[in-house]
Length: 289
Image (cartoon, rainbow, N blue to C red; front, side, top):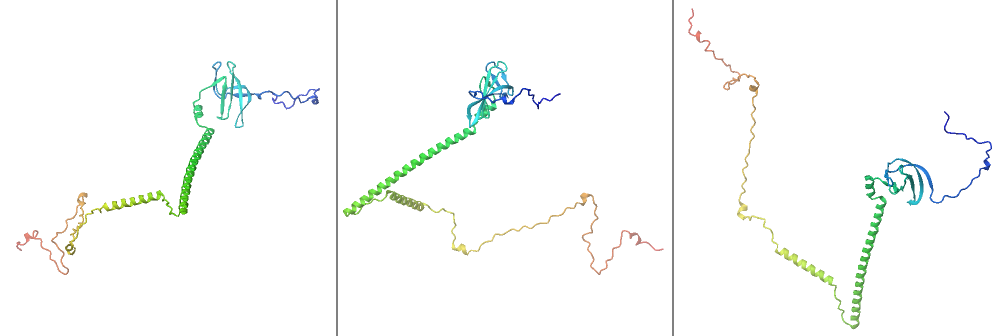
């Protein structure tokens, strides 16, 4: 079997490479289109005949470079034909959601996981929302600062007007040779009056409050000289616990103990044992032969 890959090519005898010239044809008008082999990126239903096209089915498609872009990413458009009615179906890339978008000729089948993913907030939407909130917050902050500055300017202007009027009154009184009647600030008078009222209320509260009765007993002088009776403390003696004899329970026979009346003889004294009268009773009255 010969090899499929041809390494050498046939050149006819009349071949002249100098006659080959590079020619430029007319530029292609419109978007760039090329034929590619692809698989269906999602399952769809043809809107012309109702044919279902499953995901992964292979097609010979036309690839078109569109003018649309997403963050400098080129968006491509693909054209395929329905396998039943040869209706044209168009879909394009969707780099925003990292997917494909069906444009016309077919309807994409329902995918619950895709719907849930689309309802979620993307990173771009989250950034836009944060930027809007930051702008609104800055606007409110600027408004509050402007209101505060306006109030402060009004207070300063009122204080300056009061100082100017007082200085003018004093200067006029000095020219006329009279004592200037400058009223004191009403704030100091109110503060002093409030302090006096608080002191008076505290004094009344402490005067009307009596000391609590803790039930102390009065001690007379005769009771001091009287002797102190000491309470009698009862002492309890601990009785030793008697030991139980378990020999009878175990079946051990014990010899009878000696009589309590028998006492040991003192040292150096001879003790004469008593004669057994019961055994020698028959020998006392016997006659000797």
